[in-house]
Amino acid sequence: MHKESGPLRSTVGFLVLCSLASSTVSAVNTAPPNAAYVDTVNKADVYLQELADARVVSGTVAVQKSGQLVYSNAFGFASEELDVPMKDGLIFPIGSNTKFFTAVAVYQLQEKGLLNVTDPVNLYIDPTDFDGLGTLGWCPVLHGKEQLGCQEPSIKQLLAMTSGILPSDNMGCGTPNSTWTANDWFWQYRLTDLKLSYGDVGGATGNFFNGQETMAQQLNAQGSLRQPFLFAPGEQYCYTNANFNVMGYVIEKLSNSSFTDYVTENILKPANLTNTFYWIGGQGMEPQGLRKNVVSIPGYLTTFNKSAEDGAPAEFQMVQRTPWWEGDTAYMAAAAGAMYSTMEDLLKWYNTFTTNPEAVGLTKASLKNLTMPIQPLGIPGLNASFGQGIVATGTKNVTNKLMYVGGIWGFHTHIEMWLNHDDPTQSDAILYFTNLLSVIPPGSNGTCAIKSPNGGSPIKLRSSACGGTAEDGGADLTTLVVDELAKMWNISSTPSDSA
View 1 (cartoon, rainbow, N blue to C red):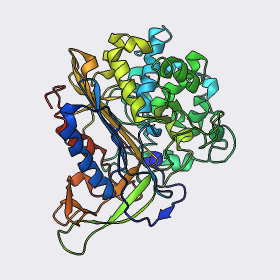
View 2 (cartoon, rainbow, N blue to C red):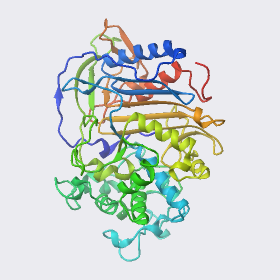
View 3 (cartoon, one colour):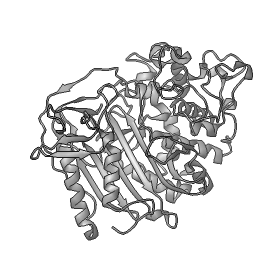
């Protein structure tokens, strides 16, 4: 579960300011009625509507209990400017939730005998596809230890974020303060300097805008294969999107098709994910024309003022568009984060691969390997590990929960599934897709609270909901919402406890 940083939440682009009043949008629960959960449904509606009225919740929410959809609702606005209410069934950019689709595609190729995930990925890199590699192929060296020669990360190490590829798109690894500075040796490789250095990546024409770029072109623009390694393969965990973009290239190379076509024919169609697609070009530039029911892009950011009265809750100030750059999907995200989906489709996807992996060309052994916890994330308060394109809790023998938070352009798409090992069709899940981030100043004593528009009383939030700035995208409240819904439906590491 990873909150995107760096260019995937770029400040490039223009800001649309909207001094909209805090208006209320009533939500309609679209899940089938279940008499056993009437009180819980009402409790969830009241809780989420209050947060939506307070301008910190907007999006779609779903709860699956014992394999059955028991709650589905929408809150807030799909378009603030036009006062269009949010509704179920809208298509969101899902950011890094793309990664597990890519990982599954790689394992499909292994099932077909086209690769082995223990192979060095170097074997699958054709030097003629890339600038500056020469005729000997991809030979990345370890910075400061060049005498060790070519580093050869395995395919599995790329999928597990342990390859050593320089994280120039997510600048959170390799420095004590998680921030790159001009004193760091890798400062020269940061992507802000490379953004306009290849073709027309920053322009309004060509493959980077019409959606026709290949993964080789994407990697050439990104420059990842021309950079030294940050650490030796397998030495540590470091989240960087380039790992999955390299795997997107391998998928295209071995399948002799575009990433779009491969994923569509081998994953989306077999899983019947009719509202899920991959798109890296400009908005509205797709060959089939405009798609219906796609949320307004980019997402929104609400900011709050700190009250002059000590200890008083923060007050809503305004809503504005999130800073963004349309080229993020082509230039940065690609096979690591350029897919779109609905909340309903993403839940169907999780239910499909956990209950019937054979439907998408996987054996149960491959699924177990993909979802096995490998590298602890090291996030305080979160006992979870990165698997291969997915986050998991449990042990190397038993995975208890799968989850991910994909983030791009002010959108966060959060899913958690508590696995029922006796009967996977009875697993529990909670999803929250949001188009709204918030910047809430913390109280002087470290507390976090906002002023309710319904009477002005404080709405207390967890401390992690406060802080952040408009430049870094504010705070992610999806974990708060998912955790609260899990409490309401009594969902825990033991699946399907009594409601």
